[in-house]
Amino acid sequence: MEQKHPLPPFTEETAKQKIQMAEDAWNSKDPVKVSKAYTVDSEWRNRSQFINGREEIQAFLEDKWKDERYYKLKKEYWAHVDNRIAVRFEYEFQNENGDWFRAYGNENWEFDENGLMKKRFASINDVAINENDRKL
Image (cartoon, rainbow, N blue to C red; front, top):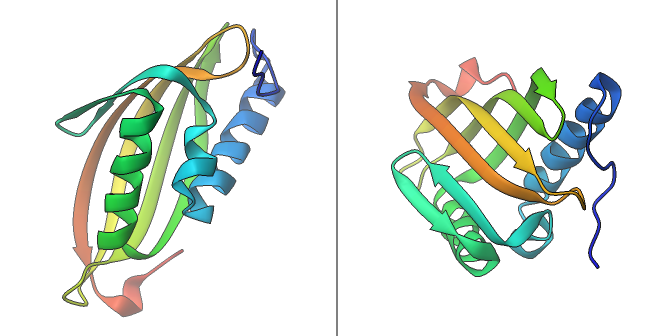
């Protein structure tokens, strides 16, 4: 049985560990590595998209990181209870035209008993920025 420690129920410390692990994985820009943190039948809402399962997650991330160059993400603990964690995040990227953006958002995560994320609901807004306004 696959397990991804730390396991729920989370303390504030273990929730923050889980968040840092997610940030590190996403910054690797490795769709396979990232997808292994999710259940095989994971459910996502990402902006207006509904994504189901690891295969769709991998395909989504491959496309995302083709379009979002120089991607850099920072996640921040917001709250947790039992097997759920709420996260605030921001990331920056450059599109194929050379324009820079910062995305702001919130995620709600729900984990199974093995520490794999079974639900991820993300609300995200993009803001155009100048290259010299980058923070990440």
